[in-house]
Length: 345
Ligand SMILES: Nc1nc2c(ncn2[C@@H]2O[C@H](COP(=O)(O)OP(=O)(O)OP(=O)(O)O)[C@@H](O)[C@H]2O)c(=O)[nH]1
Ligand SMILES: [Mg+2]
Ligand SMILES: [Zn+2]
Image (cartoon, rainbow, N blue to C red; front, side, top):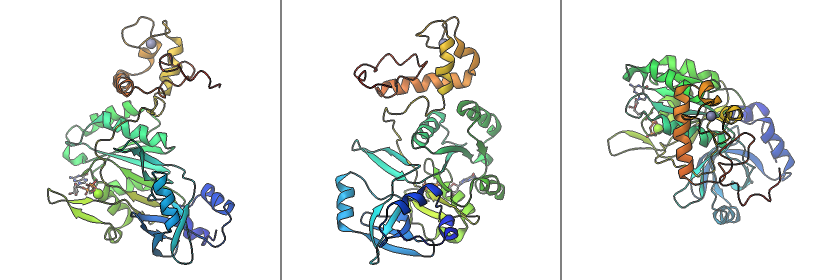
């Protein structure tokens, strides 16, 4: 594949792994481009130097359709001399969600970091944030929590502390007013050449406001925007913007009804420590509830433990046997382990 200059592609978010994939592919007739805004059979792509309106080559489109797949924003793709897209590279850092039809829908590809935005106003729903966390971690993407509308909430600090307790110390949690300059300064640290960020969260939480502030307002005019029923601008397509310091940011439309697939694990939710601690509970089938000699209840804070139990119930409802993967110390591994005994470890 042909690659434009390292600095041009770095500004587009190209990292070493993708670069290697592109070079390993051969195909000297194709140029490496990044998908900025996909449509059904067309896509706006960036080759590092310019934006190009490309068309998906018929056999590539047919292949995608038969796989129940689609080109995604953030995909790295191969463009021929006729501005036809011929393929996309293997996806790393993938955000995908269960679709209504029972398959999966790719939300964004080649993502390094996801900014999970939740409003401190009426949008408040910690269990939903937990779902986003699992979705993101499952795709190999690091999460950062952004609590917006701090100016609309009197108890922002307590709520931020509560969320921090829920997600654990490894996940940064910011409480910001998306319309302030200070928000930009706080979040800008996550941008870097060779890195791609995505904004995820419900409609109206301030994703586009943040995009606007981080990427520069002139870029937002590129986005497909429409008024929703309440006379408000709402994002209708996923699009990618370059950030001034290098790297890029993908703005997405608000997700509705984010469901679990059952394939999520407690590890994805950041509860891998519970399984380890549970090895020291007195009872092998300890639910870490009222049992005497529970090692988890002592070590895990009350807030996190409440979220742990809520999530466990939710995951059990999805009747997944993936959840109960036979990780050492996971005392919930018994159920669902049947039928997988042939799989050696
Ligand atoms: N007061 C206040 N208003 C905010 C904040 N963040 C966003 N808003 C306002 O909330 C409204 C919705 O913001 P958007 O940025 O369009 O929300 P979005 O997340 O992009 O919404 P969708 O595109 O529908 O998914 C706008 O009027 C913003 O100005 C905030 O932190 N404080
Ligand atoms: Mg928006
Ligand atoms: Zn216990």
